[in-house]
Length: 103
Image (cartoon, rainbow, N blue to C red; front, side, top):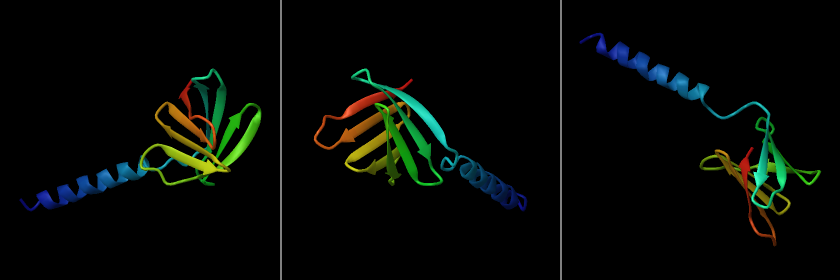
């Protein structure tokens, strides 16, 4: 039984290493979306800078990353962008919510 403790410690440390490897995204990326209204947009993620850029109708809008329980959340200038999996929601002040899916 004296070997059980070291083996358990190795398994625990291996689990921590795997968790760190699967931690928050650190590389920039771009994702294209098609929205329910037919519009095509792009979301650019810059996690190390804590910024997301929404590209819509030829215009770009820089948004600040916000804490999110899951997925991602960016906000700024009356615009909120929430995403999880392939789904994206754009909330604009005084306008209906725009629902989009990754293409």
